[in-house]
Image (tube, rainbow, N blue to C red; front, side, top):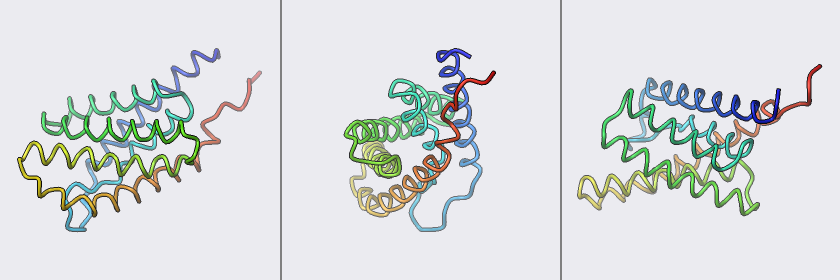
Length: 169
């Protein structure tokens, strides 16, 4: 299999897995912590995988495919705005942190989770005209960072299995 074919196949697999994990997360009940919008962000594992295994352009594509498919099949226009803001800010933060070389995938994913929550709370404050929603931010940052770290840990644990192991006869 050529390198280009392998990369395209991996991109497709990560995009499909990303969408599947998003769907599974939609089916899970909300965490009973008293703060709306707290999720595990499981699909971010695929975005982090694409970032580390394929590159920034491919990771952005996986992220946008997930957002678009979720919106088309399950979402609303306001949900699209939340996803785009959270996804864009999270991706930008993860890309900068990865390029810095100062963070492991766990740190990159953890801070991406926090950035995702910042993007979403900003959109919520704008859409509702309620700047007081910013008071949710500390709790969201705690849970977003923890979920991001867990997702980064999961990626780190499976990373060696996603890398090519040489040509097969």
